[in-house]
Image 1 (tube, rainbow, N blue to C red):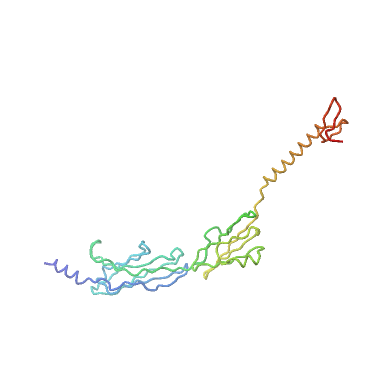
Image 2: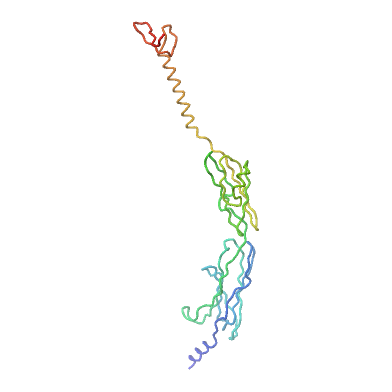
Length: 260
């Protein structure tokens, strides 16, 4: 009977890898091409070996091998990538499995430890590169210069007409600044790290004053002046001369109500 022999040979000739590990791990710069190697030690039969590369839950690459030897051998798989800032912090791992059994049977794959990618890239502002803002006297305004980068950016501010006292009392290496409302003008923020520097301008102007109240006061004064003028027309002296003195008439003769 051949089946027991084949089954016995399958068990005897199969060897899961002793280890699966990642090599060539290093920090990379954005745009740089790099390679990570996965070493599989002592696996048999290698012709049934599959190596899967994972980034998070996504399979990036699958590789098989043309190997005729039934004895345990060591194999390597190489993953080549171009560094991108969105890959910073992503986890890469590889796993080795033997395709000798149905998917739900057989020993589990042997996995490497996960490697967290570190990608260096220059700062980029998280919102508009430049901003035009209006400031009302007595109000508070915040200037947001937050930038994303690796390494974490440092910040430098330049101000228009600022006082040394106010400058010394505030942390200038900070992405958000709240300037005093009495200092409109152009504020300059620079975010920098080892990979580059970017600059952002905040152009702050004083908001137009609300003319509604002033206009209402002027209209009130004009109305009062008009009423006073009309009152003077009503009270006339006996000579026909306009007078704002209060008078009364008795039998056609003016009688002053003011003591003589």
